[in-house]
Image (cartoon, rainbow, N blue to C red):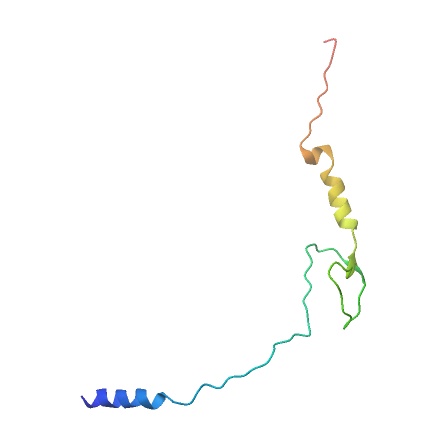
Length: 91
């Protein structure tokens, strides 16, 4: 019985009638992470740190050499699965 009273008193001591402290403000960030869909080397960065940009503005240019090469190899008949048949006549 005593342990129940001690447990009840402990629970009451943990409760407080003071209101919880509130902190008001805004959360701001000064860094934006830019992730690219391709792993091509960056040739040039068109903006400087701190510069404001707009939607659709060019931020950087990437080297298209590897992408162009992979597109060219994908366009070959072997890559597309096309087959060439030769017919022999006169046999």
